[in-house]
Amino acid sequence: MTVFDGLKFRTVHSPIHDLDPRVKFIYICPIFAVAVLFLELLPLIVLFFLQIPFISLAGVKRQWLRSLRGAAFLAIIIFLTNFIFSFIGSGYTDVTAVLEYSAAMTLRFIVLVESFSVFFLTTSPDRLGLALEQTHIPFEFCFAFTTAVRFVPVLAEEAQTIMDAQKARGLELEGGNFLKRIRNYIPILIPLIVSAIRRSLELAEAMESRAWGATKKRTNLYILRIHNGDLLLIAITIGILFAAFYIRLFIGIPSLNDLLGGFA
Amino acid sequence: MIEAKNVYFTYPNRVEALKGVSIRIGDGEFVALMGENGAGKTTLVKHFNGLLRPSKGTVFIDHVDTTKTSVAKLAKSVGFVFQNPDNQLFCETVEDEIAFALKNFGFEEKTVKKRVTWALNVLGLEHYRRNSPFMLSGGERKRVALASVLAWKPKILILDEPTIGQHHQQKEKLLQFILQMRTQGKTIIIVTHDVEFVAECNPRVLLMKQGKIIADGEARIVLTDPEILTQASIVPPQVTQIFLQLSNPDLPKEVIDVYQAREILLGLMERKKK
Image (cartoon, rainbow over all chains, first blue to last red; front, top):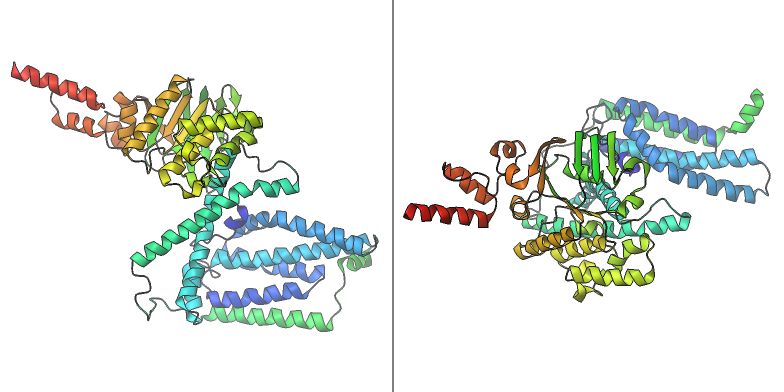
């Protein structure tokens, strides 16, 4: 459940927390695109370290590390599958190139998790809902989205309780081979899904009982406005995007292996 | 036997839930763990089957250190029924649900069938054998959860909030069930806020507040001490409240039982008549 902890918003004031969610979203989209643009390890390493100043400025280092720890299992699977299939594909030669390629693919995943984590760690569900509303998305969709985000930590807590309850009935989650381990999670997933559906039905009834949707035209108490910090982030985003496309189109990216070989 | 020595526990979010708890619960004892929300009751009982391990201190179950064994091994002798039955039900039928733990513990098919039938009978669920547990009422689902734990006949039985969502008749059945389990020599621990139920059962009461045990004794003594109860944010049973409010020197204060109260009041009326 550590990966969910790494996405849980906590009310803290920092320059990153105070940024407009729309601008933060505009920032993470190009980061996603740039991560997908490169297959080489070097630019992905740069992209990974590019997030560090944001994380330290937001003061969410511990939670961010927790999200990375939570994603470690998937990262290992990505690395292994890429390594095995690329190694077979390359005709069992060039181990270092295959290793570098697999590491790049893993780092690409980590960069995606990292930027996703920074966004959710520093954006309150309320501000996120407000941002969606101000981009003229119908309120029903905004509400459903923010409620889903808000319920992630609740579901994570519930999943932990369910795991405890099943362990208390002798279920061993860690034992057995890979397939058995996946099968072991069925007693966790079914109660979790059933309880999520029950919870959503109860929530819908409770909301309808409190006249949800009675007013057609809604107004908001708070309005999001673009400040200087937001403009600076937009400028940084454009800079990153421009630099990435320039490097991709006009500069040959050396592999880490070549660079290290060059030093040797 | 359960033995906790100077147990401290801190959650990852740095909340210190237990602060030096030391208790000893003998075989066949019936204990009610009470206290306000967040007092550390559930955290403490989760140490008894190894779901939580102490940050400091030790917990021994039948002389076995919980930090040196797995939850699955401890679970065989410590049955834990969670507060919300929906946290564990997932099978297609009630029968499968009860058999789940038995299969986990590696019981033979023949024994599994026997134990399932026995558990269904004990909790009056035989009619629902082939029903989906999700289609049952809240109270019935709670009984299925209890049956699924009872089936492997654990030596120690922990019930977290067993009376929540149960009507009077079901509570009465639960009490009968607990008494039946006691005659079989089982150790029963209930975590509850239900003072009336505890007063009816008259177990040993452990009162908790902010991660510490503030009172340990007979229900008749603990539940009639207004000072301690106020500390633990608990209201005495209604019968006790009447006797405390009357503040008559001729009347005893340590009354939690309706029948005992009736006898005392009838005696008083008789004396007045004379």
